[in-house]
Image 1: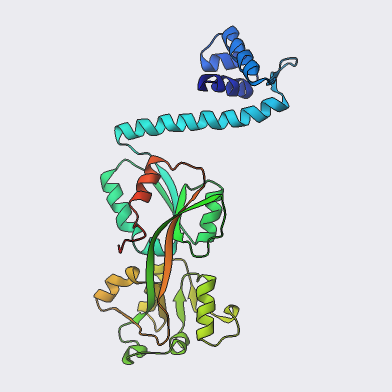
Image 2: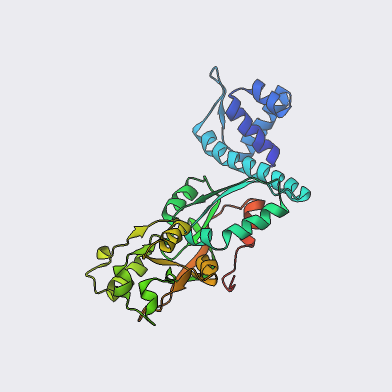
Length: 300
């Protein structure tokens, strides 16, 4: 069955009248009636009950209309996207960003895209992956990029791996701990650690190193999804900042922050990834943004 006939089915279901639906699809009423009758004959199903004041869908019709509506919607999206590609106007999008990408590669990436496509409109939500996953399932955002270490295995989600983001512990220059060549984790923790929400695996590892009974006993002096806010606190106090190396590179190069050499502490890091809903084709702008993010083997 061709797409035009699916469109006719949706129009009748929406308008509940052959007369009004015919006006919507620019056909005469007899022509629309013949189209629906042909569709019913081809499907072997009665789609509409004509014996009431309003045309209503039968149970079989409800089943077919729901799928026809998605088919018609996808066709319109395809037409829109092709037109946008032709005119190099890739359209708008909304997406989510976790704390690490928000504080590292996202700002320069968006600046480049804005220079290249000044007419676009983007909406970016910065939060932790748990909240962003809810927004994705609600289809309020097209995708999100974040640490995927703890993301649950779910066939409804598709993860495109990006690079690993290394991190460490940092303090302001002149901090008492900088007088030592290396420090113990317990010494750093006594000054209060500032961090984003830690993955459960990292919390468990730190709890073991600190000889705590459980990960639940691990306390952070300040937990926040805004790395730059945490960095501001670290620069103005004796708190210890846990952060991705790329996020503090400018402050380290300027001599305002120093990395601590912590005895026995494994390399900290986060596995970045782009998360989308399985079976959903990203819009042109979403696909462009995703394609410009640092790949799994990139050092950027």
